[in-house]
Structure formats: structure tokens, C-alpha cells
Image 1 (cartoon, rainbow, N blue to C red):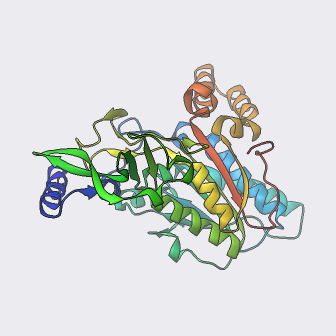
Image 2: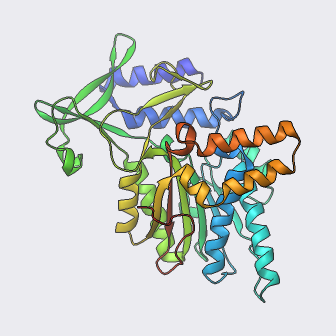
Image 3: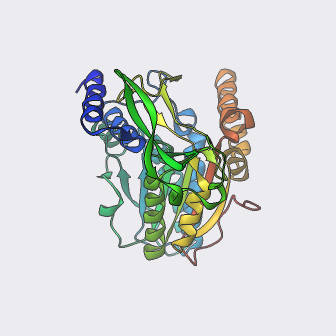
Length: 364
């Protein structure tokens, strides 16, 4: 189906049945977008932290391996990644995990850290790229088919931002869902006629007309499934994404194409549709389901607590002057408050009874 066809499908649907939910528009558009291409890199539409520097994946791998080590080095363990891109993060993380696992093995009689690798990926194009990077990988469409016979060490980097959302808007008649309708052939936002007050967080229900809030039932579902797995199987998880520590009113819905923001309605199926992640709700869901919240903080602070400054210096010292400068630019991009350091957040989760996590000291 061509991009024009995707837009035409939405137009026919709206003309036949009336306005559609933003969740449907976003979900179907992103499903087509990711299935048809590798969107990463300079020639794609966006770049993620693992593609910026190996340091990002290495430190995630060290965090997971440290949790495994202090949990008693369980033998049967599963590495699980949601939305793994090109497999770059998994490759770097698994390499770091293996090195720490080998060190642990030499100091004890237990086996090393050799997890089975499970990637949650619906894109046929990206599955091909991932299989080349990680030959032993097992692919899944969702968490339901991941084995439950051992702890999971799970990562989700820039996964939740692409999950569908609902937008709710306060009107003089109460809260309504913001839908996608048509003005001629042009997609426009319209307010639905069904009361939605019960879906709005209590703290915002009395907000003035025009106030808008985003909710993501899909994100809450995934957070619940991850937490249920941790409680039932043991393990630890890191969720990394751009978003808020506390729910903020306002629209964050945007479309990215060729590293630029574009009209959210201009290119359904050919632009990456994303939102800022509501980490407050994700953490509440996790705790309610019985998982341990290790912490929630800015990416820059977490990476620095995990030792990225020293790692960058070590890499730079062994590199040529040009490469050393590039490494320090990569470091700056990952941790600086005006780059990815503050906008991106890191949330750590663990099974009940698993050890206190590194990197989150003093985090809320």
C-alpha cells in the first residue's frame, strides 16, 4: 500500500463511520511505517542513543549484569528487548554482560551470563537487520510468547513513545475525546460527543475548558505485562524514553520525517508518530502490579552515575585525536541537559526481593 493509499483508507473510513480515534490513526500509521523500512540513522528519519555511541548499550548491559550477579547468578535467564531497532543496543549490552559474566564465572563455580535473546519486533524490515546483527535471536510479536522458565533482563529504549495514545480535551460540557475527522479531504481534530471524565486523572478533572491531556492505555498495558513478568519470573527492566517524570497537560503528539518535525496529518504511514512518555503513570502501574520501582531519573544523571564519564575518557585516550573528539561529542549528546540528558528519562524496575539497583541512588 502506498502512502497515499494509507491516507485514502482513513478518509474512506471516516466518511463511512465518522471520526476515528487518534489511537487508531497513530497505531495504524506507525504499524505501516515501521514494517516498511529501517527508519534509523542519518539516511533515515531519526537516530537513537545506541546508534550515537556504544557507551549507551554497554552501560545498560552492565546494569543488567550487575542485577543478575547480585541476585545470585540464576542460570536460566532471558534478555528481552522491546522495539530493538537495528539490534545495536542488544549487541553492545550483551557484549558488556558477557564480559562481566566471564569475570563472575572465574571467581565462582557458577556458570557465566549467557541469556537467551528475545526481541519484540513487528517490523519485517527490522527483523532482517536484527538477525544479521544477532544470529541467535528469537523474534516475537509481543511478550506473550517469551518463555517464562527463568528471570528476564528487559530493555525498552524509545519503545513507549511510539505506542498509540488518546487525547482528552476539556470542554464546557465536560471532557471529550479528541478524534480525527475530515474538513473536505484534510484531516482535522474534532471533539467526540461521549463523556470521558472518568478517563481523566483526578487531579485534572476540574481543569478549564481547552485543557488537553494525553493517556496511553497501550503503554499502561505493556507496563503491566512487564511488571507481571518480573513478579512471576524474577528479573529487572530498564525503560528509557523521552517524557515527563510527572503527567503534564498539553499535546506532545508529533511527526518526524528526515530528522525534522512535519505535519502530523501530512504523511500517515511514512512519518514516525511519537509522543512524550508519561513515566508517572508507568511507575504507578508497575508498583500496583507488585514490581519494585528502582528509580526514575534523567538519562544524563543515570549514565553519569553508571560511569559514562570515565568510559568516555578511556575510549578517547586510546583513540586518534579526531576519534577522541567524536567520542566526547557523543558523550555530550547523551548526557548534556540541553541535549538528551534531561529530556530522556530512565526507569528501573525489578522483581520483589531482587537487589537494590545501581545508578538510582537518590532518585524518586
